[in-house]
Length: 163
Ligand code: ADP
Image (tube, rainbow, N blue to C red; front, side, top):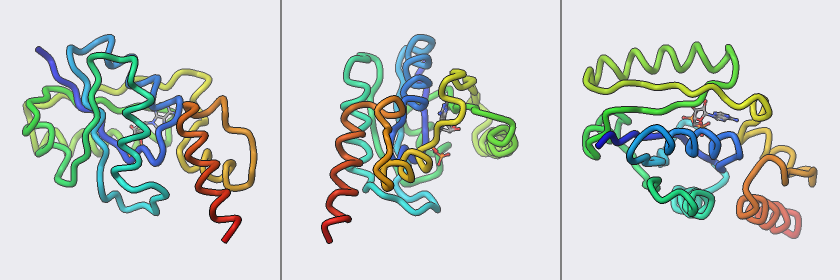
């Protein structure tokens, strides 16, 4: 059985992430969407909130499960018996980072293979940070995120507006 880990911040999950998870699920026996607890980023949602949103978004994918982790991605992959790390590539700008990270991960855990899936054309410009910025300004995001994420973003920014 081939287990693949799809690691990331997912703050929050977008339709671009979801498309990568769905496609990975059609290739590998089991996919673990692994939410990195403490990225060096300004987060909007806690790890538990991000996990709950991903869980709802992937509920129709029986071979996908969701987890959080706070160690090295390679240590996590080893712990869950994953042979593959899945990442998504949007544009050349992603490539440099992913290329470097793939080599580092390979050095840390030579038995793991990094598989990058090309973003779907319609998701090429989609990022969690762009979605948060649009939502914060009250713009439309329904074609960028799953409905559960749209509701969560609206609730956060409505609450902030009221404060
Ligand atoms: P990280 O902080 O690890 O980059 P992200 O949540 O931003 O975590 O992204 C996780 C992975 O999903 C990365 O490989 C990223 O390139 C990929 N990804 C992000 N947005 C999209 C998208 N719109 N389409 C395809 N892949 C994407």
